[in-house]
Image 1: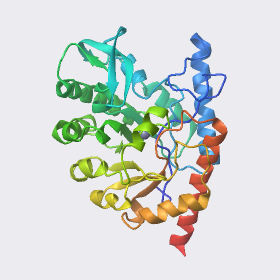
Image 2: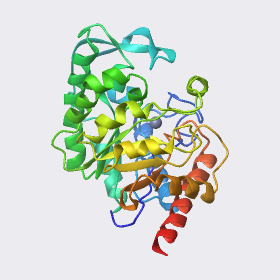
Image 3: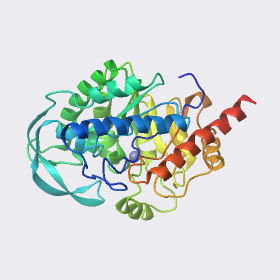
Image 4: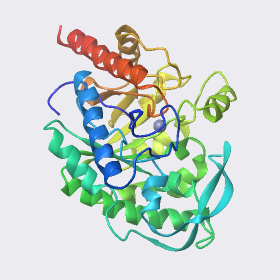
Length: 342
Ligand code: ZN
């Protein structure tokens, strides 16, 4: 990484209104067939341009080619029946109708590798690709085959590892696994969740990241956050084990969250993606607000290990708001870079 404090997003950006219904999760595509394939690619190029204009250093695909960060990956696997649906409680928070695991899971062919190659062709800047983590995947499915969360997680870890190696070969610099489930199922995370995550990242030369958040700014999540009290200490449960893990980068949410900043101390030595943009509100941060959060984080992480980022994905926001937030992130990081250089 050439610059100090390389900025990046946690993952998604809103899609253009001609591709999918704005400000909605699991929004259906508005195009079909060849037009959809071309439309997704055009949206990816626009998302790259938005990031570049905002001065973002590590670029992503902004999930323009996926409907959802978990289900789109699962749709490409054998052993999961999307017609057979059951209602389950996702991350202990809200009910959703989800597909069923009906047999041994496998990945007949790569899922995102063509898209990653396309992203690679758009830029010489470092690129990051996001994949769902094993534990978050099992939490979004009904398992009628393995009947064991742990067993299914190990199977997904193996599949994710195959995909990750192909992404690396396609030129991806950082592979990020999204594990919001780590903020809910602490015991399982420590028992086998982090181990399956390490299995998913096994043997990679690309850097690896884990993104652990409090979710998109949707009602189920904001309601849940209201129940968490004055201090959010969830990270305290998994950070000690993650500090000892093989994962290079830890992504957490800080902006407007009640996470005590000193919890970052628990992953000392790791690179830290500090969420300095709140994705649950439309108000656009000022660069100064971003800089304040980064300045605070610098008390617990060395400057050469700090990656300014967003708290979570921005898919449910309007494009204008998301663009404004990206610019604030780029400008806020620049303030701190100048301070550090002075
Ligand atoms: Zn997130």
